[in-house]
Image (cartoon, rainbow, N blue to C red):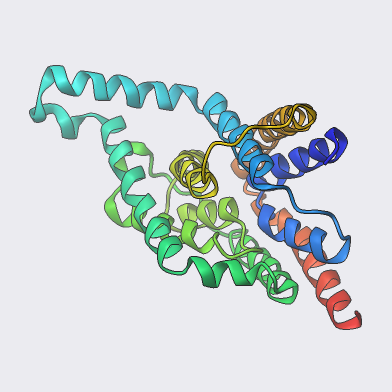
Length: 270
């Protein structure tokens, strides 16, 4: 794979991973209809690393507060544990990760087979659009980090597990779920992407089989793809927040319906 192809895949990964339009769905459609070669395992790991670094860069304050809270926990003892909102946040993030770990482990092969079904992917893109569209008339939620609860974490965690299905946008369904649960728009956005950190790390772990020697000619494609995924991921995350704060998440539904319907029509013509 050339560095240009890796660059394009990196840009696609960064944008579609964070914008609510499904990175896995786009990859399946590109492979099937445009005959774009899928990234190899090593490049896929690098692209995931690029998006992981983007999340860490954007949410470095929250991550820093969580680490500080963990450090203080060993000094202050158990009595103050419940008083620290960032320790509570960490607990809810771990709890919210359980559904995707269980479902991903139990149904891994079935989910993999869905990547070979472009019609299913097209339908899932349309369904994601319906979910986003349903947020357009929601009342603005007021609950902030100190009012998160177990049901919120499990509900959003289950929504994240739905994102394992290609064509279902992980960010789209988790943010929508947070909004339906009455979280503030800012918290729904932040919790969704903080929850993505263990999910992405888990995905990297599953893809990584054993260390391999990377041929010299592959280094530039891997580096360019990783940087492209990182930079486009930063852009997507920065663009998405004001859209959510203005209550316009549903705007992406139009794009998803268009892509889903067109790809579905193509699948029947072929």
